[in-house]
Image (cartoon, rainbow, N blue to C red; front, side):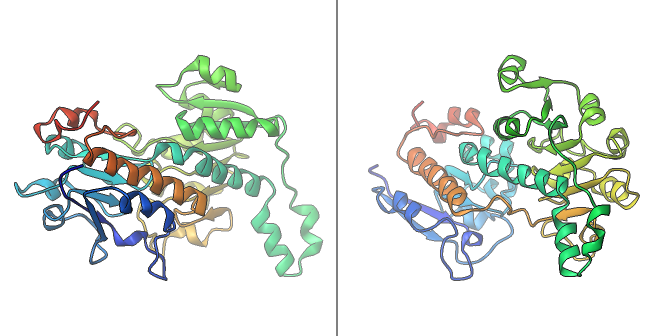
Length: 341
């Protein structure tokens, strides 16, 4: 790596102590890479601006958006935008491809942590964990008999999205003797059959499942995928869980379904607007578990994401194709001809 490169890391990855939330060990990847200088961006920013793109050859991005305008000027230096996570809906991928900027993500770090939070929600809803916590704190022990949980054996889990997270969740759920359904137009029925899952259309999944988990990517085909019609198809006894992205669900329809108690309950780690507005009705409901898009955040999860994401920048700047490229078409751009296959 003969050339000198400058790498920026967005400041929202720092905790209250000013330390990287993924731990210092992963930063050795940058410290040990010849020809790389790195720093945290000087300020917290909601999005990457043209001025920022003109300063750095690569950016490690947590929550800031990366719009087309970031690379609209001719003086941008960016060759890599590495997303801390699996989702990349905050990045204008077509614009990056046209500008010769690789976009990478960290898909192999996410299946187990996100599948674990989905399973956490399933168990919490089935056992009425939050309600029983409240009964205990309010000295309402006599109400225990009227708030029975439900067993999982023989119930049906429907997973919307059969990617890495969805498949990991179904593998983990088998131990509870749940029947497994999945809806995904790209699903490999043979592979999923080995897991014990049956591929069905979305309507069938919604009608037959006792627990419905959204685990697909947000894109134009999944935006608003679950709306009033879909909630109406669910069993009154069903539980709905979203561990993917807020805009996959029509939040107004979600709120209405929960206010009218059309289904038994729900849990969501994501919202249409994040941070969620303080007056969002979901926050006041006793039949919805809410968490701040961070339930899967653990030391292990963050370290693995950072290790993969930071390595992708070092690889690309060193002329090696990263392991997880979102937009491989960008490799044909003249700016990236030095990156080997």
